[in-house]
Each structure stands twice: as C-alpha cells, then as structure tokens.
Image (tube, rainbow, N blue to C red; front, side):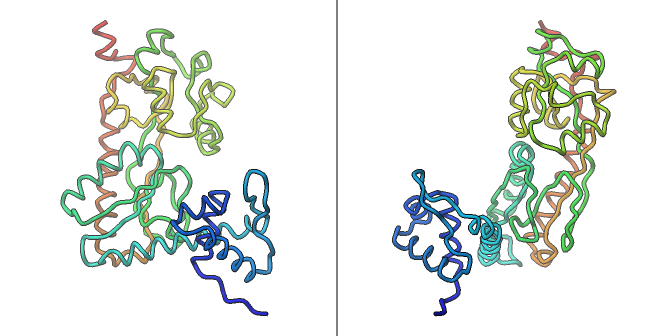
Length: 317
C-alpha cells in the first residue's frame, strides 16, 4: 500500500516533537491540536521506510536513530521555508520586508543593533531578524540572508566582502588590578585569574598561533560565550580577551600588555549570490560592510587606558 508523500507540515510537526519532547508541547508550540500533531507523525512514519521516529519514555518521547538522521534534512527544509516566507513578504525592488542576519554572539548583541538602527531610520519598512551565535550559519541552506563572519567563508555560491581586521587585546577592570596588580609579561599571566575559553577549539588554536603561553589549565573562568566573557571582565572577575573597539565603549577597562597581545581577527560580510538582485538585501549588505569597516578602523584607533597610561578611575583614587 502506497502512502502519500509527506508535506512540510509533517516535517514541521516532527521538528516540534523533536525539540519539545512531547506531542502536547509540540502542539502548543505550533498552535495546533495534539491529535493533529499525532496524525502528522503517524503519516510521516508510514511514508518512510525507516520505521519509528520516537519511542515513549517516562520523560517523554525519545528520538530514534532514524529521527536523528532525518533531523538535519528537516531543519534544511525549515530554513528554506523561512527564507521563502521572507522573500514573499518583501518586494525585492522596495525597501520593505524581513531580513535575517547572523553574527557572532558579541557582534550580534553589542555592535549589530546600532548598525541596523541607522539603516532602519532611513528605511522604516525593513524588519530585522538577528541570529546571534558562534555556530557557523549555512547561507546556502538560507539559515540567514546575510552573515557577519570572523573567518574566511569557504562555501561557493556566496558573495563575500572582507572588512578590516578586528583586533583583540587583553583587558581587566581597575577593581581587579587594584586587588591583584597587572602582569608585566605574558609569562606573568599564568599567575593571574584568566577569563578564557571552554570548548571552542578555534579560540585555543588562536592562542597558540600568537604564542600566548595559555591553555585551559590556566583559565579560572571557562566561557565560550563572548558576551559572558565581556561581562566577567567588566565585573572585575579577571583578565580576559576583548575586541578593542568594544573595550573603548566600556569605561574603566584597562588594556594590558598592548605591545605583546594584539590579535587580528578577519571579518567578512557574506550573502548568497541569489540575493544580489534583491535591492533591499544589497542595500543592507553594503551598509553592514561600511559599518563593520568603520567599527574595525575605529577600534584600531581607539584610545583605551593601558598599564602604561593609568585609567582616569585609577588616577582619581
């Protein structure tokens, strides 16, 4: 007996069950009834040769291996459906509609909103979805329309424009320096409280690349989220890495070992080449490139108090 091919509705219900862990929670998240969600799951399983997608457990529905294999393909469909909806909602020749932008957590939280405020003041018909994450967004699957990346994109079919490097330095709050003093060399860092990284392999490779004598064993605070790292620095928890441009916006932070620790990060603005004919996408793409260029250059020229130049807070005490 043949079964009708599954539709996007079936896969959408499948993803909701996968994420929520039960039929009732999935139904609430999609604003559907539980019988509808159950029927979608039965129909999807009947149309596939992989068998059951979930098993019942005391804590809810547990995905099978078949469900885990299916999940990334369903998520690709979800991204494509969202991109289709964004495209349909906006006129490519008018400055209206939704644009989804992916960026690292700290850029997405601390920098990007200001960029978008400027352009939306000129084009109030634009609506922005911001996806702040350090996970690499797949523009080919249209998980976002435009992405700000800190690494060179290696996917084909993308338009990519490089911005000036964003520079990282070591910073601490004067409260920390008053309690513990400051390092005189990178070797001294091992004797200090360091706000470092947890499981980010790129971060650890970066430290080795620039010859810093630090590894996870030296980190008192191990945080991959850069917003949380910045918050810990601002609250005087220890010494940590921060974009120089961001530190200039955080009054009171002191830069340490400026001559020894000055790490460049590549920055790129990227979008799928299929969007180059969309005037609003192109406008936002060009605006973000110009804004990131200014941000990077301003950060390189920013005057941040250093150990050689005590901060105003320290001078006033």
